Amino acid sequence: MHELSLVSELVTRCSDLADGRTVTEVRVRCPLGIDADELVEGFALITSQLGQRGAGTLGGARLELEQVAPYLKCLCGFSGRLSAEDVAGHISVCPQCGQVGELPSRLELVSVAFAPKT
Image (cartoon, rainbow, N blue to C red; front, side, top):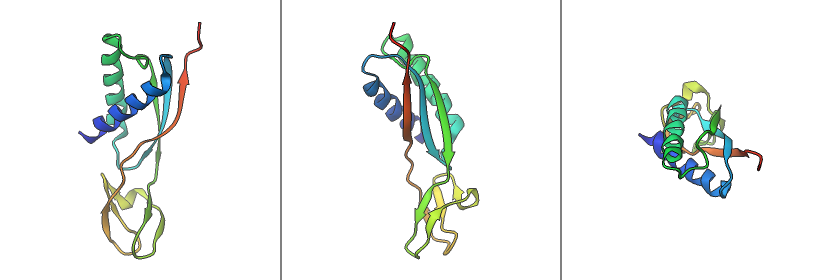
């Protein structure tokens, strides 16, 4: 379950950034090929478990995803964004030469919103 490890890394990073503050929203760019529904469910599961243990500042945080086409730079000279037809899971196919490769599977943290201090 690759998506769960991505979410775990994201939660750790956001917790570090929070520095004790309550996180309300996390915005992330996610490449096509990564299951967005699994990311959202995994985020809710992990943050809920942390909140129940009293160990999390992300307990009620919402995850907002923006899916983006991955960028490919191929040995054949093609450089550009891939379309959905060029992506299957974590695999890419160069639209110019047909070379098959593995996509980098990273989430790009865009922003973290915090609750106002009271």
